[in-house]
Length: 389
Ligand code: APR
Ligand code: PHB
Image 1 (cartoon, rainbow, N blue to C red):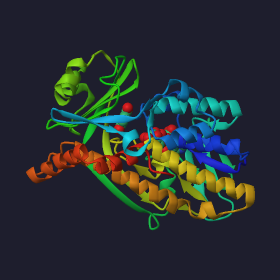
Image 2: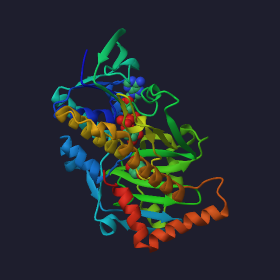
Image 3: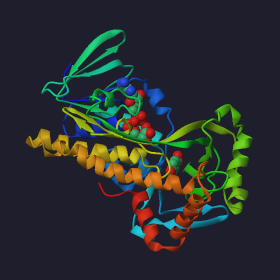
Image 4: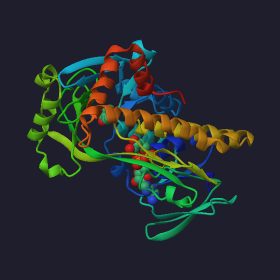
């Protein structure tokens, strides 16, 4: 088989890139290890930067998001009992869209089906070959048979555990990593949200986040030690702990109900450089991971896809390879700013077991600064709603 762009991984990065390329008349084949139901069962964050909203519209997948998503013009921060609002509109005239990543992935699959795109599921043993030649190719197995896909370019959209990043020689790759000493326990519940906007809550017992998917579907998280197991947390214990970390007035109004999903995720910041090696490009979680504080994961994948799409479209339309040559630098410049933001939000809001009294005063002072300084709020709002592509 032959295509122009071979895409490894059918998560949001791979599907969005494929969708944009197909609409520009560029042929793709997406190779995905899991089945579609599995990809769609993963629950991830639900806040879209405006640049992401515009990219989804440009890809022809914005209709349901525009109907069912909710525009938010601010968020709430709380510390022990105190709570204040960051008004994105006042601070930087921007806003975000609350719409689940699972729904985005769903919409992308529907749009790819409508275009008749080639997405092969259940693909195993994917290996990348001749990446620094003019004729790279991918080998894989499917239904017990070996297969080969020849192409012009390969894009690794296969997430943190994928094979693409590791196909770049170790002596070329530089990895930067910070692992945080805690995880997030999250639940989804068919209950009205705690407030109209998201609440990011710092507390001496640990961080909590009150988020939502719709007026009837809530998403909550609490910081937990990495040693905790999901079986240790009954729904009742979760609700009690959540309430203890939110301001009293908010806690009193929380509507509880059975969890319809419950999971623990570790927190990590990770970047692998470069994001291009010969004819291989990396996009999304294949190249970088952010902690969820600030909801940058999907948004960062979308900005990578933007830069790569522009580069590939210019190459196929005009033979102009400039955008492909500069992809890694452009993408990484934005990646590092989102790394800084998600690391600073994580550091400001969580309980770190090894923090000194001085460190804790610094955390409280960061929050004080945000509450009292419009300039500080503006920096947060610009980063939260999304830096320009
Ligand atoms: N071969 C084929 N497919 C693979 C392989 C492989 N060896 N390894 C992983 N995959 C697939 C996974 O099954 C998954 O569907 O690649 C896909 C990667 O998807 P994500 O992990 O969702 O990564 P990405 O598309 O970059 O999304 C970035 O979305 O999923 C979130 O946390 C993520 O918020 C981040 C954003
Ligand atoms: C979510 O709704 O799942 C969510 C929202 C904001 C975050 C992280 C997760 O920062």
